[in-house]
Amino acid sequence: MSYLTTNNLEIHNLMKTNHSTARLFMALMMGMMLLASCKKSPETIGNGLISDNNYIDVYHTDTVEIVCHSYWDSVATSHATNALIGAMKDPVFGTTEAGFYTQFRPSVAGQSFGANPVLDSLVLQLGMSGYYGDTTTLQTLHVYELADTLSVEKTYYSHSTVSTQNADLAAGFQFRPHPKTKMNVIGTDTVGQPIIRVPLSEALGNYLMSLDTTAFSSPDRFKEYFKGLYVACDPVSTGGAISYINLTNNTFTLLQLYYHDASTPDKPMRYNFYVTTSDAYFNHFDHDYTQGSPEFVSQVIDNETSLGQSTIYLQGMGGLRAWLHFPRLSHWTDSLEQSHLVVNEAKLVLPASAFLTDSIYSAPTSFVLLGFNADSTTYLLPDYYEGSAYFGGSFDATQQTLSFRISEYLQNMILEKRENIGLCLGINGASYTARRLVINGPQCQQGEKMRLEVTYSIVNE
Image (cartoon, rainbow, N blue to C red; front, side, top):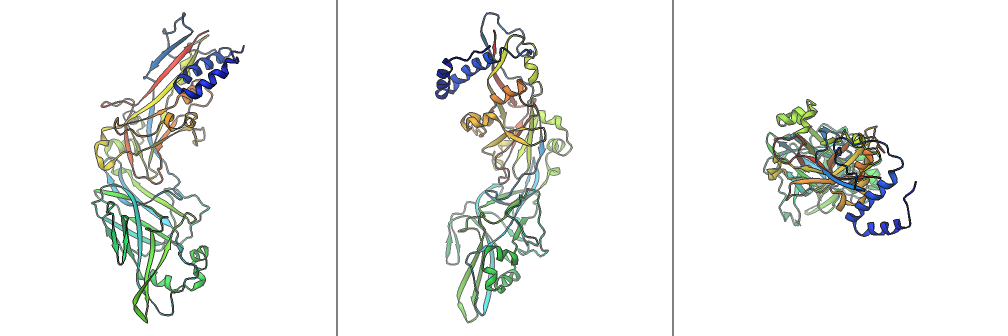
């Protein structure tokens, strides 16, 4: 039996102009097309509520069972938007150290430093584009020369490492980030952005000046002589911050070699090395979650996943994601015989915990929600393609809440069109942001609970 008519064209045009009205028409049409094939029945959610006199009955519930918990997962960090440097000790999440590996290239091909060059200094200047945490904490920074060559063809992850030389070229340089500094005067230059300037070993500076012009003939040739740097920080005992570095902004992030010719000491010169998107670089993160709060440690380290029913934890820097599952969706149709359940709207509401009140640890601005495949890979939900205005994923700072619309996903799970393995919730940009969020679970004892708000229709014959 078919219920498709020429009137469907009018419905299609109306759906394009009014999304809310469209979902009602969609509910009607989906239900009518399923009448000939669906012979399952609903969970107690719809029992006793179906009217024999109405063609469509509409209901609402926010008591759908949710099972969830946090878990650690590495992320790809090659060519991340920001390079991260610093260390912090979070009272909830424990300690984190952020660093990065990177190649450099010469600014001018065929460089010659002259007959009698004399090194004045070698400085690694890092242009800051943001920060997260307490910037008043003193940080100790180390710089190591790479012993192995990075590859732009390879994918590096947040846990990846590359061999380095033993010598600390920065000699344990200590600094406090000044992320709000608008002007920095460096010699005769004025730098209009917050920066971190790290003096490096004269041995490396003299080595770079000793290279002949053939080493500067091309970026690839230069990398045979100088493979790059690894920049890292020591852990801190309290506070601390992660600084965001715009690694490919060649105006502010540079490896600067200052020198003069022995015959003209009053004429200082400078040669720059820099990083571009054609070079290899990636972030590396070390987390010590054993230093976190007791409840956090129990769930994340001791694998007491049932604690996720009270609280879940999300963290950037290749840190923590959450698994969410609606285990009883297939039972929604168990008691329906000649009727059909159609999801009009399903909204997943994720309220922030009171832990968010500390302004030092502000919430991420956007999040991702993906479906799990049987092999643990993920896929974009069908609702994602409706656009961010519909799908959601942005944190509401006023309501202290995050939400997603997952109507089509839920419908597919109910109809068993796809295996109900669960959802992956994470922070958008986890490879280059240090932000984190604590979310109330579906059984939290204080505050607003995580919930799935569903408006659905029972379509009768």
